[in-house]
Amino acid sequence: MADLALRFGKDMLVVSSPIQEALRRAGIESVCDQALALLVEPETIEEAYRMETVAGPQCMVTPVADFTPARLVAVGAEGKGEALAEAALAVMAEFKPQHTLVEIAPCGLPLDPDSKASLVENRDQYARAAQFFDGRTFDAFFLNGFTTADDLKCALMGLRKVTDAPIIASVDVQGDGGLASGRGTWREAVEVMAEYGAAVAGFSTLATPDQARGLADAARETLEARGADLCLMATLQVFQRDAKQQGPTTENPYYSPDTMMPAALELRAAGVQFLRAAGQATPAYTGVLAATVAGLDVAPVL
Image (cartoon, rainbow, N blue to C red):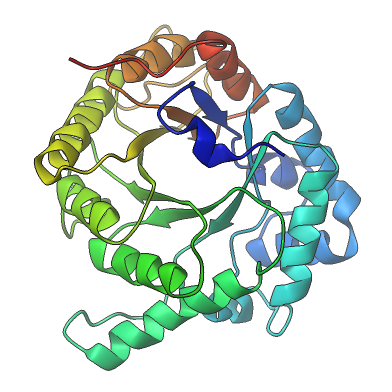
């Protein structure tokens, strides 16, 4: 498996879409069922990955992200963190991906940023999640789905307490630059990413390509002001697939896989290296992203 860090800032990379939509079509609806399927029926998970692999992403993401102790309890897998970690990586290995990303979702515990005890409790959730992957083969951790800078800070501190593996961090962002929680901004999250050891600063958004490019520009400006050199990642959330829709709208800009081509080129021009489609995205979305940027380097932004 190639070292992902050697490709930072070089060639364009596409990240696999979540497989939850495919699992739902197979009757596996909840995160509890997904964790159980991974442990007792991994062939179902493998089948969901198969088409995504054919689409050609260089980076594949683990099928579950519930590795913090709090999330393990929530999905009915308390005490099974080691087994989930082993099973997740075993499924990935079947497809021999160029790069494997271990996704870790927010732990979901209440967080009081003014309380040291609360901060330590949250931080240690992520440290314990990372420890399940000690000695295992993967390329980077992928902190995904965060909606506040404080939660992200705890996650980064927790991982950095126990690992020096590269970290890709992503927060959910609105088109105007506010975080999805309504608390804090994208620029503030980028500051946290730079300060606490992320290698890649990512955002996930329902926004239009123009707005997404603005988010990339804002991240680049924030990083330049700090003298930081992080790569950028953009995840485009597909709100609804709609074959009858006549063209992109503000509410649903990514209604078909073809919309990924202009969006990918727009984001590449803004210096983004990692591209991903999520939400209701299918492997076809990943395929268009991969075909659009195949063989291209990260664009220099003057």
